[in-house]
Image (cartoon, rainbow, N blue to C red; front, side, top):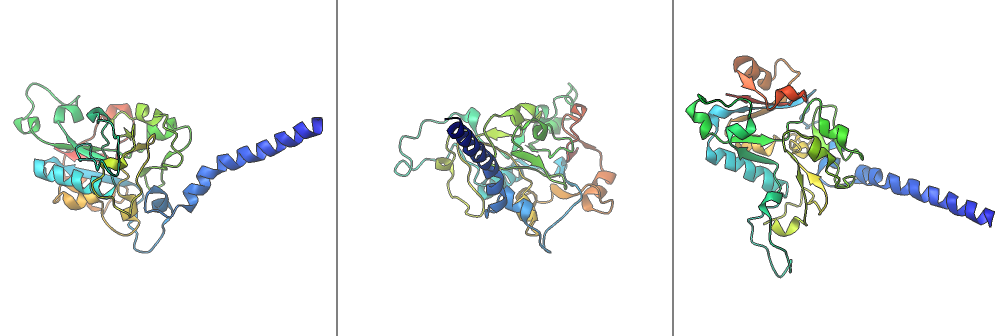
Length: 273
């Protein structure tokens, strides 16, 4: 009897180790063009940086440009749109949506919401109507990566904060840790709300967190981020540690602000105001 129990415990231990390793094996073996592949890809065409960052010139923003940036990003990354009419034949019994649970990677926000500590009674008139694009700040000291118990969210050496959807257990600790509200949780299956699925990027499932990935999959192929291409010059992405980069020249020539700097997360997204 003792021998039988000992054998059972040995087999159970081996099985537990195997199950624990499965997410990592899935992550390494993934063939999708999502976060996993972006980390693995190494080719001569890839755009690289010591630390990726972004500059947003608010002087070049319009409602139309802000909307175009959101559309370009969300359509390419299969971000669900809760305003999309669901195909009842394909997805029967889909429950009504709650817009408070919508998924967002990049979206326009009012100035006083984006920069609550910058508003005062004599704020310049243009800022009352200006659409401020907000997104993951890919912080140098990212609190979300420290809060995640499974390393589902992690920061690459080049500063990009990514998600491994296979590791995410839906605890939402990362959402609580993010001071920018840049993460969204899938309270429901998002697929019924995707008008046209892009096969080059993985869809998500119910119970996982998602956010902007700075188009890591495009950088790996030598292409610029979707939001930058759609911004008509309002967004520039580049290497914050290269003094000769376009982004560093912009930072040297213009006054910029970052969101909630006092929190000490060192955001990598700068706004020219």
